[in-house]
Length: 111
Image (cartoon, rainbow, N blue to C red; front, top):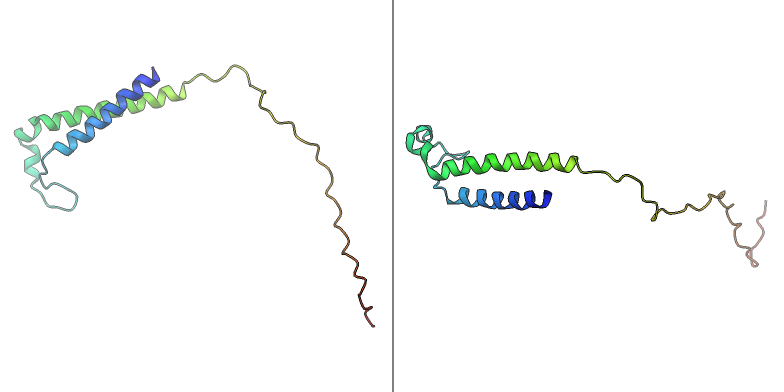
């Protein structure tokens, strides 16, 4: 079921991108000062691509929420598999630092 919904979700996402890219730019972007009356006209609201975008976006959001809900409801294993468990080695006390190497040619320090 999850795989089927993931495939449908990918198809809806690709269709949504395609429909958005096919739409005509009306100059209503973030930085431009387009005519806001054009968005409220009967032609703008009834446009096929606009309705298709709204429907696909709604389906995309519903599928996203449904897939997230299905992912959280996945069954957890009934028992813990210990076949790959590592056995810890016993911890020993740290070794004392090694004495410095003896230098046979060392000159004694005078006091």
